[in-house]
Image (cartoon, rainbow, N blue to C red):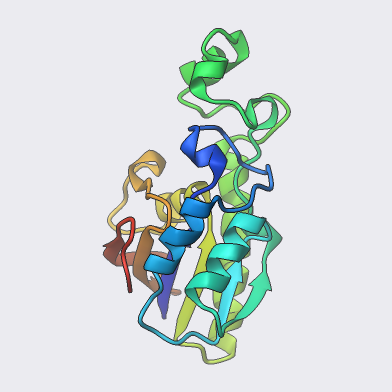
Amino acid sequence: MEVILRRHSTTAGNQKKQYIGITDQPLCPEGEQLAHRCTPDMEVETIYCSPLRRAVATGRILYPRARVVLVPALREMDFGLFEQKSYLDLGQDPQYQQWLDSGCQDPCPGGESIAQFARRVCQGFEQIVEQAAAQGQERVVLVAHGGTLMALMGTYAWPRQDYFQWKTPNCGGYAARWDGEKRRLCPWRALEEGGRL
């Protein structure tokens, strides 16, 4: 099964380099323009989206005729007290420094850890691909968040790479093949910012 993973387009928080995990920001005007430039050259019947506005809006622009299925498990990581703040805002915060010192592995104060987040995302993803396979779908398209893609690729991509190696720009992403028996994603193409598929 082919799997297309797309990150949402740009928000005001992205422009300010803020942590906007569960903060439900819309696309900014530049983000809408970027998404329109990235419209893929393919017809897709169904897309699976994070329910946050930035992902849904991106999905509707990229795949205007597709049915949108909202999947709460694909939401971005909950950054807790760090939400809507940038690293500059948090530079003197001892809780932020402790989180960085843990390699960002500890739970964010009032939020999730990467491990908790990845477990949630992967459970949602496996339900999607199992359902798609049962329905005979040959292609699954997900529109979600940078962290969501990092969690999926860090867990399933082969050859293995660290979670943080899978960063992708707004409207970027990956095309991969899902091997259900080995539970692996075999990426064959990275989609850069502004990339079409």
